[in-house]
Amino acid sequence: MCKECGCGLGGGDVKIGGHSHDHGHDHHYDDGHDHSHDDSHASHSHQHGQIVSINRSLLEKNDRLAERNRGFFRAKKLLVLNVVSSPGSGKTTFIRETAAKLAGKLRLGVIVGDLATDNDAAQLRKAGIPVVQITTGTVCHLDAEMVSKATSQLDLDKLDVLVIENVGNLVCPADYDLGEDLRVVLLSVTEGEDKPLKYPPMFHSAHVAVVTKSDMAAAAGFNRDLALGNLKRVSHHARVFELSAKTGDGMKAWLDFLVQQRETASK
Image 1 (tube, rainbow, N blue to C red):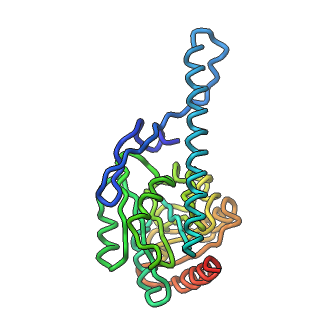
Image 2 (cartoon, one colour):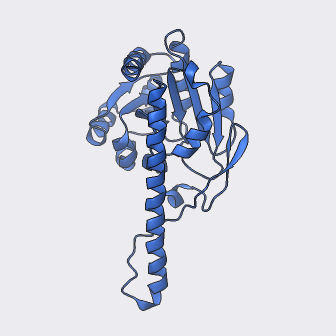
Image 3 (cartoon, rainbow, N blue to C red):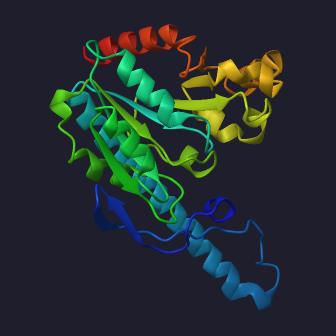
């Protein structure tokens, strides 16, 4: 899927907190066609067999690292969120306001993933939130290894909740477990009601779905019933919240949910 959504082919440097790390795997994907019927494509088919094996191996490695992360986070009694969405859904504002409104109750730290710039991390840091930036370059998702390296730059003993702000992308992050407790997918009212139907793997994999920018629903012509119906169809198991981080409307239910989830994680 990475080649469809812009993920760089080949390895490259990933910057974590200003330090470069080699992203130690290539992104190659099978085109889904069977070439074995034609001798002229024999080497091509053999190559594709290798590619499928490589992909499986990479995801298996990531899953192992994710389980290691999960065990480490649980030992620290952390509640870990993997926040995913398309670009512009309001992830950073949502996280910033969540941290601000939980001040005195829960201590939040954030790992931010972006292809380029540290604008989101700078915004969170300005608000007094401990944050580590992962600049992925051409890689369109975070993986468990990147998260593991980033956590070494946070004092996890001083945190109750770790929020991972994934790269803005509704495709590849669906395949990568980071060791989180909850995957939280955002759907802004400005994106259209059919996003869950267009990107079912992401929405189906989420434990929580948050409809954001609710203050703009009328101006955007947002069809609430249709959107919620689509979410129920694809994310039928997910807890759904509707809110505006900007106005604070609907935030209390979300914050109460986090406090309850953190209590469960700390036992």
